[in-house]
Length: 403
Ligand SMILES: Cc1ncc(COP(=O)(O)O)c(C=O)c1O
Image (cartoon, rainbow, N blue to C red; front, side, top):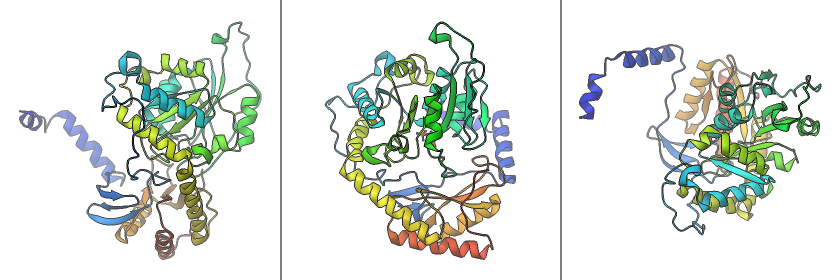
């Protein structure tokens, strides 16, 4: 009986270690617990049984709770499981069609689908980077990219946030064959999700124009620009590899990397999280295909315009230079951040406190995210609550600035 087995292990060394780890996190006020969400309908839901308006999802266009679009794939065999990895027997027409659409939105020749952005970055980066390459990564890249770099052979140089790698090429050895030639890589994001910061597109383009390689993760703005594209495409930034996620503005799940066909085939042949993992569920892929049509078209345009209006309104209400749907409000102390988040929750606003290790020590913050599903009244109510809390804590209301 499984119960008997579990109870026999209650005092095992593994269980004791688990308790010690949790106790330590609790003592340092860093213990995390997933809020129990129920009855979600757009930005309205219950947290631990109490109704709230949520300001912490990445559902920027309000698609996550939208009625499931009618499946439109021609592959009517759509079922729950792909059955195997893509390279064994899980490569279905629906996967290839979604990849074609995403490649076209990204302005690239080809794209490779993954079940999530995390799985993508921890698979693709180690597959491509070599020990002999010069690799530069921004200090604030996402955990999945950090882990991808850790799994790779390379020794990355960490750049101060938003700094470009040094312009002068390091000594390049002459190689007669391209496969052995070392590359210089810049690993960065188009919108840093804890700080709402962006690189100067001219710097990114200067890097690729100099013949170097650019790996750009556009997770937090893919879908928010014309045609369902991201900031990268809207600003004509030339990339070698573009990463987009589908669980944020697209309101579904999964991720893709877009590039030339040889780069994509290189990934299909070498990225371990692609090769050794069951292909995306055809049900999810089918939903994605329908969602892509919505995000690309007039429905997406309407939601993007609504989101832009909400961003502008929140800037007015909080009197802060807010330019994106991500609004990090500075606090510093993790305990104060947590207590402010709890007070907001008690008033019916769900706003998460972001603490180390997600952000550096001393930079805890409240992080709001806006969605096209918010109404002006939601924004007005939250702005009043935030201003009151900051005034009461005698804390200046300002945006968190990256270290
Ligand atoms: C820049 C970046 N890349 C990748 C991911 C992971 O994507 P996913 O949630 O699809 O695993 C995130 C998640 O927030 C992210 O911010």
